[in-house]
Image (cartoon, rainbow, N blue to C red; front, side, top):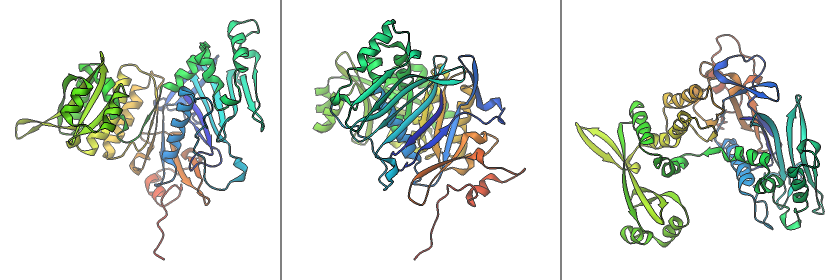
Length: 443
């Protein structure tokens, strides 16, 4: 589970912003909390977090920073390539061209802090720490000087000097040469079978990023799991008053050559299908899901059954409303929760194309299903009706806005004192908490 995240110098984020999933001492509402045991220390953690703010305030940039850091950790970088970090474009000299990504998280009954900083062409710093006796103790630290010389220190807590993993780590630290200055040491440890590094990188691999309509890409994998997933989607879409009674799948195994000839697909699309084991594409206004099986592409077309005038009528996915398609992004989260899968979900614009009641259904159902799990959801939204203390703890709500020089800032709702019976939505729209659009008069 995520406990804390700090990022700086990324897109609209200039100076460091900190997001925390640890509640204040005043919060004792167990509806919102999970208690972790880390080295004998009990830690309470929130399972949800929501960002509210105007358009162009940096909500998507925050989610994109998580995606960038996750991908940098789990995919590594090729030798000699630049880091590719998109930095803040404002003129803030004290940022010194360095971007920071720092996580505190819980995995395998331990709390770790892992962080790294990047310039345009190298890893500047990297460190891994573990919580012991309520203090963070270093496992390794790394620093690179202005001449590009990298120094890595393997600390005593990593393992005794004679252990195989410690010896291997000592050898690997010498392999960071000048042409590998953009690569993370953690990935090298994981790649060479260091068990602790494998578990930590595995934690990052479970971070799932969901932008609007992006997770329809889940369908190829999840449809292969069988009828239970289709049944779940069918029942839930029907319950949520979308008009969909059932989802059906038309399947056709076909070679790529046959597929290209049958559908008259452009060469660019054929190359994309050939180079991906699964995906979704549009042809003649219809969406098709494909995945590879025994060197052949299995082609699936989703059909959504509606009852119109007492008749079963089948729609293609592109015929469905934006709201139904948005639910197809989000409902697999709840299905995975039912299956006992633990993950951290970052959802940009969770309320996009959804009625308030549907957004609340997703978030409240997640809270219920995650009571005995190690899952979390962090979302961005514009729907002010979600800012309420019946369904959310104060610490779950964050306000995001830009300052006078265009930097993204974060403010937790828990920083504000509230009077009894206060109308939170009215106060928010009146600007008491900031993070609202400023509409200027015509000049």
